[in-house]
Length: 73
Image 1 (spheres, rainbow, N blue to C red):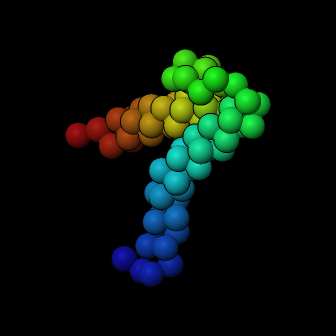
Image 2: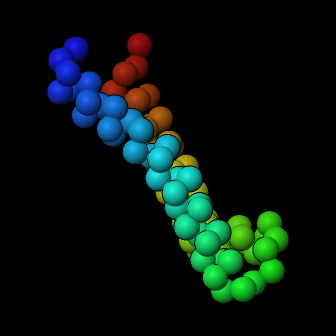
C-alpha cells in the first residue's frame, strides 16, 4: 500500500472515533456552563450529546449496509 493511501485511509478511519469523544466533551461542557444539575438524563437529553451519538450510530449502520451491498460473497 502506498503511503499516501495509507495516510488518507487512516485519517478517514480515525476521524469518527475522534469526533464522538470531542463532541461529548463539548456537550457536557455546555451543560455545565448552563449551571444545570449534572445527572445522566440531563446530559443525555442535551442536543449537544445525543446528536453526535445518533450521527455516529447512523454512520456505522450506513457503512454496514454499504459493506453488505458491495462486498457480498
